[in-house]
Structures are given as structure tokens and as C-alpha cells.
Image (cartoon, helix red, strand yellow):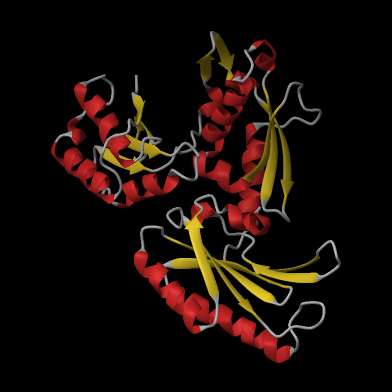
Amino acid sequence: MRFMGKGKREKDAGPQAVTAFWAWWASEGRNIDPHQASRAADELTRKVGAINADLTWNFGPGEASEHRLTVSAGGVAAVRPAAERWLRAAPEPDKTWEYRASQEADPDAMSRRLQIAGQELDLSLTTFRVEPVEEELRVHVGVYHPAFARLPQGVPVQITYLVLDWVLGEDDVERWLGHIETLDVAPANGTSVDALRGAVASIAQARDPDAWTLAEWSDKKGLPGHALFRRGLRWLDHPTFDRHHLLTRPFAAQDNGLPLDAATVAEIQELDVELEAALGHGGVFVGRETYAGTSTFHVYSDGEDQNVDARLREFASSHGMSSKARLDPAWSEVRHFTG
């Protein structure tokens, strides 16, 4: 048996709690028996909860080590930075322990039997509806199991997400899947788990997170707008970049709100270059919108890095820009770019 737990809120929080966790782990925690309930497991729950009460933990077999300790946000974007900061402070793996900040895919998941809600499900009977959309860099998925019809309400949805996490891993579910649907009826063109994995691999291969996409649109009044953005970028590529910065600057415009001339366009493009230089490795420039005489720049940084905040405020001030920032770990402010 492998044990798991969910954090319980303690008075500590943030970097101090991470430091306290690894100090305890080095002196006591690493001697825990992952097969037995114990006071050490209870203390592990308390230590994880001190970092963030919504984190969960579990033990499992390691890939290169005997055991693995996973501290996971359970797919919740607001919690993932805490798990990532915990992992970045971890010691090097050794023969006994390795560490992860999200659930890894289980290659044997579909050969297992799942006991849930008083039922035992043969997961090999699961079929999928798989709809890859390369323009979105997403795969839309439906999940069906013959047992769904006899399970209590809500349980089939729970199984859907469990299966997808086991098949693809927690991060790839968030990174690559679009619409997820629990199916009441077997899909007409149902496919196997191998087809799902293949579709995700194909989309992943097509992605270039550094490639820029140019898009055009018109508002309800017919005014045009342009957007330049990194379509393939995902928040999971930078899981601690949870702070959104919105920088805006007016420009000389035509009657339709677009830049007045080539010189104005060049001026805006130069701002792109200077903004990336100002960020360095401390943040990521995700996209820019040009509309109604205003350029709007979207940037993300680590919410605990006050130096980046200061640099961006200075950049905005010196370039005649307004700026505001807020926590946005799921990158909801740029989902119209990244999907």
C-alpha cells in the first residue's frame, strides 16, 4: 500500500515553510516508510500544509530511485507555483528518493482495475473520442466507460479526470487538452488510449513556444485590431510566473485606430524588443494587442520576485506607459492568445 495525504493549513507559509520542510526531510522525513501509516506521515501532511493547504502528496515507485515523493497542486493553477517552488528547493535525487511537483503518467494505467463508489472498473474497457485541432494546439477529448451508466452522479466525471491524469500525466492534461467531456454513450468512432497519446504527441511536436503569431480582428463597430502573441506558450512552461503585468501606451493612429504610418509601427516593434531585454530571464512577454490607438503588452513574472516588478515599473515610467499587475497563475488574461 502507498500512502497519500492532503495538506492542513498551518501558521507558516511561503519560502520559510519550504525551507522548514526540507530541513525536516533531511533530518527525519527521508527515513519514512512509504508503505506504513506513521506519525512521520502525519508530520509530512502538516509540513506540506504549511506550504499551501491545497497541496496533496503521495508516495510511489521512483523512476531512477526506489521511491518517489510527489507534492501536487492537483491541476489547480493557483496552487501550482507553491508545488514548483517546493520542488526547486529539493535535494538531488539519490538511490532512495526522487521528487516531483505533479503526477506523472502511468504507462500501465489502462491495465489496472479501479475500485470506486462500491464498483470495480476494468479500465481497459475505456474508450475515447479524440479530436485534435492543430490551429489551437489542443486535443478535445471525450471519455466513455460502460460502467458510467450505473455509477452515482458525479463519479463518472471524477473517473474521467483520474483516467486522463494517469494516461497523460497531470501537466500534459493541462497543457494539451481542450474540451473534456464525460460521455454517456460510447462514441461512434471510439479510439484507444494509444490514439489519444498519439494525438497529444502530434500536437506537442507541432508546437514552437517561441514562435510568434499575428492575428487580426474587428470589434462590433468594425474597428480593426492586431495581435502579436506566442500561440504555443502555456502557463505550465513557466509555473512560477503567476503575476500578470499589463502595460499600455498610446500611439499616433489613423482614423481606424491602427498605427498612423510605418514609423509608428517601427516604434511599437522597438518597444517589444526593449521590453524583452528589460525582462531578461525574470519574466516572459506573451503578447501585444494594437487597437484603438493603444498598444497593450502582456507580461508574466514570478510573483515573489520584487526585482522584476521594480524593473517593469521603471520600464513603463521611462517609456510613457501605464502599468498594473495582479496575480493570475492560470494566465486567464491571455487565454484568448494561448487557448
